[in-house]
Image (cartoon, rainbow, N blue to C red):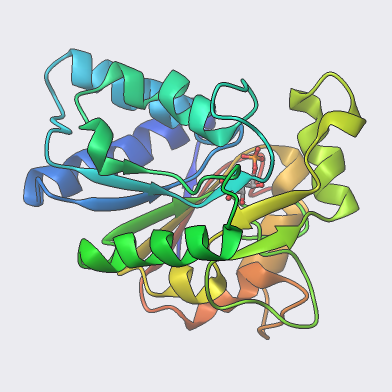
Length: 242
Ligand code: F6R
């Protein structure tokens, strides 16, 4: 596991944008998995800026998302569909048909999850998966548990995740209690993984990930130690306890 400590949030966002730009230059048909949340906002803004400056071309890029809330319509501002379009897809030249998110409103959730995985398979798998890190060590919405799911699944969100995500909603009662997420197996199948983390509130989660000498399902991020190509990119605040 490689660790990159950047100065601050801007430096972190630029560093990861550099990596993505470089990868797209090497392979115009790059297959990405992207996250939502607060952490990637600076990265997405930087990618949009570079697209507008003709520095990156997303024409042939394909993107999947890690997760989506169950029960939120695509037009709901808190849906991950809305977030991805609002912060990235609407502002770059990625083809709409090359952007995939699981549908949290699907009537048949099991069929939806299966077809989502099939689409990932059909494009030949994922080159680069980017994710943030939950304060409790979750990866995607693979929450600490006695067992972790390997495949895409529907999962109840933990109280701490609902609490953390409530900052985006008017009140806690509005936060969905379930999400669709890629499983740990899907995540570990990506050829390369980059975990981005900023802020002092994540320092303990970073320390538990980087310094862990075991893998445990009670901290899903520790499983990343079993992957051959993982880079954790943090800012100085998140690296405080290292
Ligand atoms: C989101 C996701 C989550 C977040 C994590 C950190 O697609 O997969 O694992 O990356 O909850 O969220 P933020 O960035 O909001 O602190």
